[in-house]
Each structure stands twice: as structure tokens, then as C-alpha cells.
Length: 526
Image 1 (cartoon, rainbow, N blue to C red):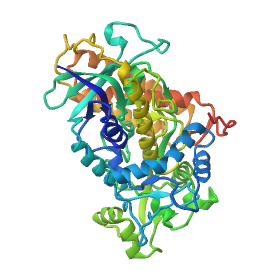
Image 2 (image 1 turned 90 degrees about the vertical axis):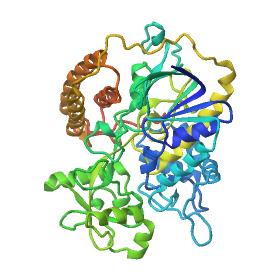
Image 3 (image 1 turned 135 degrees about the vertical axis):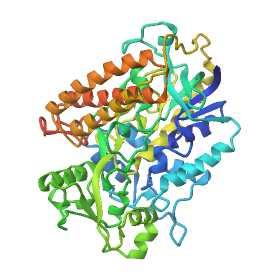
Image 4 (image 1 turned 45 degrees about the vertical axis):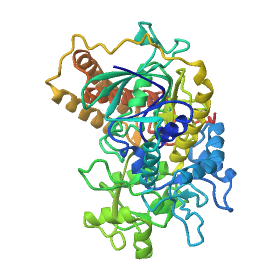
């Protein structure tokens, strides 16, 4: 079955929904969700969204903080674009019904997080992402121009390749005409034709054994663009959040927001000793890459599986008021954060690289845009500054809509795209092959491509991964398409890109630290 929409949006987080809401003013919109609208990385964001709001703050300060955190690898134009456009986009979120916390005078109650020189994090308690997501969903459901497809999984984006042409990285003017999409309820594959396609598929957390991301974070958009020979950038910069709750066996790993350190929580060893000032003068408020490596080092030196986060010295009622979700979650496993230490461990959290896009969110493939975590704008550089990601998502979604709308009248549907051909395939009876290969990818990446790396580990990871790639491609060719085998293909592609990019970077910078090249080369701000 073929469906036609002016705009095809793949992904239902903040980037995808905000794009869809604005695109709906210009044409018909299909919004595809792998599961449901309510499940996305946005929903899991605790800390909030960064913007210059207070009189003591300035664009220049926020820009400087972002550049410092990005460790000399940011795209300055992208940094300026996001930070200077943030206040107007915050206003739009408020108009959509998002309720950020305010003080008694009605002013925004701003938090401060690691790497920020000022209080500039707007939040809703400690479940900011959930508040944003729920507000956007209400807007989507009341918009007749947007058709939501839940439990629809995008298999491939459509390009000239599907018209029988050979497409390589050097092919000029690769175009996107939509996507092949699997309805998980009927197992039918639909052809979605579009004039403009937006990828907002989120993160890559499931490539690792433990992550704060939901299980749906399998890097689908990045993998699809990679297979379509689009440009991918900065995949070596994988952010490990310093403070995820240490509770073995739970997936996704529960995040302890960085805002709690901005509030005054202190990191301690299991013996109770504060240690962050050994690594950085900012102590527990140092940027995430520094804090994560420091914790990793302390754990390895002492042979411990976790360190502690201490918030006991703060007012108990105030702590419960500011962080009700964390308080409740920890209490469920027997930890009262007002009187007990919180066991924490670094865990995969965010990808700073992804689909390379320009200042309008446009990828190297014509008619294809990307926003949110699956994209690489250059804002984050080698290390994301806390709470800049939601800001980036909505600013770039807005920019993408504005440009795409000007092109819409010049674009048509490509009616030559054939229906999906599954001739010669059969239902796989060996699901164990898929699940076991998935586990192997997680083990390879967590063991060899973590916080601290070496060429020896990276090359060993690549060797193991190449075997899995060959086995999976053979299985894919013979099998009727399923979400499970597609996700396996995607995590293998993403893992390959992370390792490849890590091997090519002959230095340590930001989130990429290698024992073979411990020094950073000169700045490479774009």
C-alpha cells in the first residue's frame, strides 16, 4: 500500500513532534512512532532545557560555556544559532501548554547544571521531558493535518537506489522520496511517499549493555542514512552520564539528573571521601566527560562497582520538593536520598555525533532533514553541555520547517518507487540468532568502546563486529522483515560507525579518550 504526505516525520520525540506541528501549517503530515507517542528519549529527560532567561545571564556566557564543554570542536555558527533562538522557542513551548516551574514571583525557577556558569535550566520538577512530551502530544492530537501512525517502524529511506541506480558516497544529488515502513500490528510493509522527510529517531543507547535510553534507541535514522550513503559525523563522541542509579539488572538505567549536583549534591568514594577536586577545580560541577572519567578512574583504582552521590546535607523537604521522581524511585529500592547515600555509576546517555546537517537541519541527501539526537549540528562538539539537547532539538526543527516550507511547491511525489519486494524470503525460526547477536554487540561495545579506549580494543571490537555484520546481512536477505532483525542491522551499523570514527581520531578530545593518543591536538572549531 502506498501513502502520500507532504511531510513524513519519523520519530515522535520533541524534535519530531515540534516539526510536525509547525509543518502542519504548510501541508499534510504523517508522524511515525516505532512504539507510541509517549515513549521517546524526550520523556526520559529529567533536567530540563537550557536558555538565557535571567538578567544576570547573557548569550555570550551561554555560548562560552557551550564552547568550553565542546572542547574545541563546536561549530560556532550552530552554537550561536541555538542559543540566540532558544528564548523564542521556549516561549512557543509555553504557548503549547508546557508548564515550567516558577518561583513565588512568577519568574522561572532556573536550575544550574555542570558546565554552566549561570542558572539557566528551565524545568518541571525532575521530569521536565515528560511534561514537554505530554504537552506536545495534546497539541498533535488536536491537529487534523497530522496523522499519527503508532507501532510503525521505518525500514529504509527511499532514494535512487530503489529505482535501480547505483548510489555511492560520491553520487551527486542523492534524493529522499520517503520510506518503506513496517506496520508491526499487521506485518505489512507500506510505501510512504513524501515531498520532505524528517528523521527524528533519537539516540543509540541500545548499542551498549547499560544505558539511560529506552530500549527503542537503536540508532535507526543514523543507520538508514549510512546505508543510503549520506554523511555521518562525529560518532566517536558518545556521552556517558556520570550519575545513573546503580541498580544491576534494570533497563533502562535510571538517571540521576545533573541538576542534583547543581543543587549541591557531592560525589564521594565508597569510603565517604570527596574526590572530584583532584580532577577539576569545579569539583562535582565539572562537565560530564570529566566527571565520568573521574568516576571511572576511582572505580578502577579501588575495584568498586559504583561511587556515591551525597545530598544528605541539604534540606530534606526542599530535596523532596525539587526531585520527587528521584526520591520516589530511590525509596522503592530502599534508599532515602535525604538520609542515605545514592550509589551511582557512569552509563551511556547521549550521542553528540550523527547525521551531518547544515544550519537548517538539512542532511547531505536532498529533501531529507534530521533533528534531535540522531543529527549532528556541531552544537555539542566533543561533549554536550547539560540540557542543551532539548534546546537544539526545537531550534533545528523550527529551522527545518521554515526552509522545507519554501521548497514544498517545487517538489513532487516520486511515483516510480516500487512496492517492497520480499520474494524468496521466509519467516525466520531462529530468533535466538537475532537476540544472541544483539547481546554480542552490547558486550563488544561496553567492553571495548567505553569511556576509556585504545587502538587494540577498538580493532578487536571491529574484528568481532565484522563477523556479526556478515551473518546478519545473510539472515536479513533470507528473512521476512521484522522489527527485530532491522534493529539488529541498525545497531551493528551504528557500532561500526562509532568504532571507525574513534580509530580515525588520533587524539583525546572531549568524550573520546584513548590511551594511545592522550593529548588533544589544536582546536578545530568549525
